[in-house]
Image (cartoon, rainbow, N blue to C red; front, top):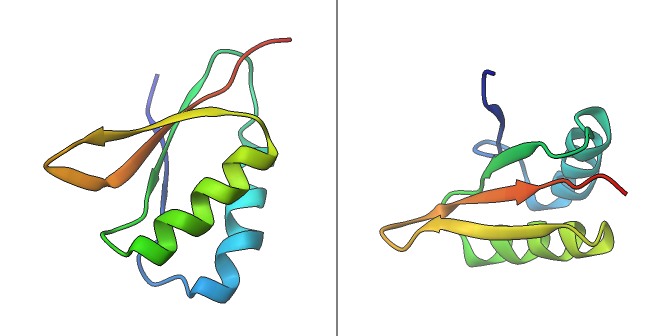
Length: 77
């Protein structure tokens, strides 16, 4: 299966809330991994983390050398 990726480069901090919500809602499937590319902006990462917490999703930064990607795991209920 092709990875499902949201790249936030070029998205303003003000638009992140709507863009990430739309991405999660549009791609919600049980047991699916999503990737969100935030870049290295601490503010961008913080905004994305707070949105993902609203969905009670598990997520991790993919690599200590590349902290600009977040892997998100959706689960079936």
